Structures are given as C-alpha cells and as structure tokens.
Length: 136
Image (tube, rainbow, N blue to C red; front, side):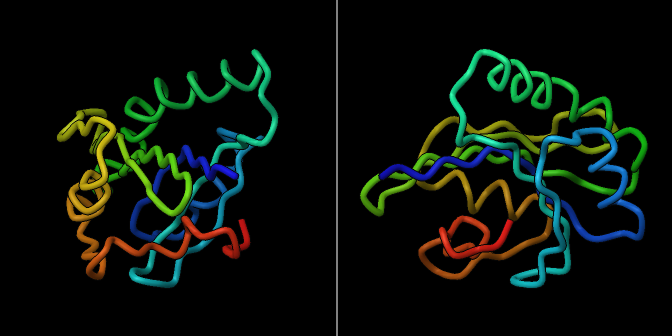
C-alpha cells in the first residue's frame, strides 16, 4: 500500500496552528516535537476526487502568499510518495511570499527541504510524521 503526504512544516510560534486550521479547514494540523519544535499541516489524501485535487492544488498555490503573514518564518512544502519502503520527495521552501528553494521528486529532496527550515534529519532522512503510526 502506498503512503502519500502533501503538506508543510515550520518552526512553532504561538497561534500558527490555529491560523493554519482557519485557512485550510480540511487539513490536519498539529505540533511536531521531534526532531524540532514545529507545526505540521497535512492535506487529506485518502479520497481521490476532483474536489480534493482542487483543494490540494489551491493549498500549493496559496502557501507562498499566506506565508507573508509570518515574515519571520520559513515554511517547507513537502510532497512524499512512498511505496514498498522507498520514498521520493518534492516541494519548495518559502519565506515572506518568496520561494527560496524548489526540489523535484527525488529520494534526497527531503533532507534539503527540511534543512532550509533549520531541521537536520538523521541519516536515512527518517522523519516520524511520514510514518503510518504518526497521529495526524
């Protein structure tokens, strides 16, 4: 069974979780404790519908402009596609409305995306929010 993730991560600041929930009410938003003090947002993916595709597309397009409300924070938009234990990652990093980095679908992209927000992942790019047991 495949695992798919589309969402974003940033360092924690008070009020960020609520602001994300308000802007993208269909998403799951929660605090991240390891390997950094942050906030994660996950778009739904279990239902394959045109409406969901539009919601996710809109999220990807809106995140850069929305980040202007938090000019001191950097956000990493991450897409993870995993099958059979192998994962590829893509995404971009944005701060104050400006894209700072874009990564195409590749196994090594996650480390670069997370490093851009100041997060060093352990060898092998293990990141608990991308495990099936993580409670979104």
